[in-house]
Image (cartoon, rainbow, N blue to C red; front, top):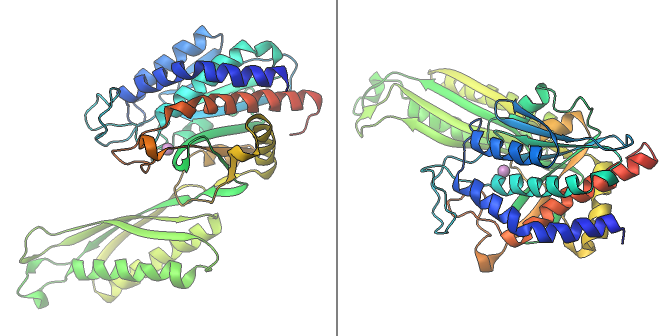
Length: 402
Ligand code: NI
């Protein structure tokens, strides 16, 4: 085995207690999107200590660490997200969130800690790196499109990023498994907001009113035909109305109803078909019920599409290091991920690291108040990042192709 690969594997295991300690600290002090100041300052402090050139305040709270390597085998970027979610943790653990109503329920605390682990290892082998490593710690993955702002503020340039990798811990994947897939792996996401305006009045005299609830209900039902009747059955799509707010009393027909939801697809074409049909169907339904409506249907995040060559490269590197058995082909999911914005600009791949272990109850769904990660495998995240960086820069050093 290549001695540097062996060093990375041994060192990552050795660093697991530190990675766990960092993760627990972030877990106890979760911060919402664009408020990751404490997390960012800890990250920046460690990167400086380990000899990185550090830039802070990118997209408000983002941090980028740059390690300049020897001969230019190009630049690899590795990314972690730092934000938590607005929910109350129900786990009874010593490292339980100390911030009321805020919790790391998606594992971004682990992502930040694993990338710090890699930062440490890469700084120790910097003389063996044939190019640059850029570590991107971004804010606001959860609905805030922090990645889009990081890209707009230039994180993929100066030096130009040739390839990018990101890891997401995954509770529904067996602990220690590495999930990979070429092509689309996460959905393009759109947001729906429809306001239906009728004419309120007494529930006993509907004929004197224009009922926005009946019109709104009809919109919810009619939208179901988009995926079943308009979209190619072989093409995945989702239309979900997740919030319907109208009225307060049992005998009052309200003035208006507000519907909120999301639409998703794995391709931009399917997404735009769904978007167009939501607008048409909601508009015509409102016309039929004689209500006024304002319809906002907006694409938020593009699909996350793993570039085939970069994915195959990762598969080869990780199979060599962890064995074929550790790798598994994952199915695409209709969740969204702003890592998509990086992949729109440069090749790369988004990799899942399984952290689901029923014996440790770390197989709860993401965004659940019971979510937790199997900390014993976090070293793998640090190793994956480091191995990809070392191998990619070595391959580029010899030959300027991925
Ligand atoms: Ni997440």
